[in-house]
Amino acid sequence: MLNVAEFASDLTEIIADLPVACVFSGRAFNAASTDAGMNRSVEIDGVLFEIDRTIICNAAEVASTIAPPELITVGGARYRVLKVSKHQDGVGLEIDLKTETQ
Image 1: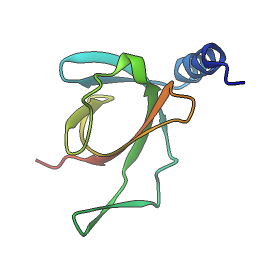
Image 2 (image 1 turned 135 degrees about the vertical axis):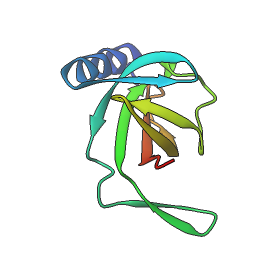
Image 3 (image 1 turned 180 degrees about the vertical axis):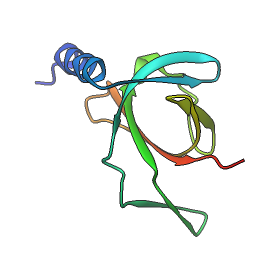
Image 4 (image 1 turned 90 degrees about the vertical axis):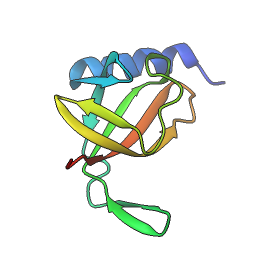
């Protein structure tokens, strides 16, 4: 049986251990930054983009409209959202990012 409260508690602890401040659509939240996306790429409209950073956050803390190609600020740097994946537990989001150069 899926224990959503336990997954939420675990995710909160992970984020507390590896916090990075994020802002999306004027809303501030914390996430955990991971190198899980390193050496991976995402294909969008036939173009391959290298993933520069991946963050993991609580889905309830992020605007439900976060999707490619939105901009997000992570640790003071601007990134373009490449891909958003909802965890099977329904609690977490994994967001793959590309450094915004403009």
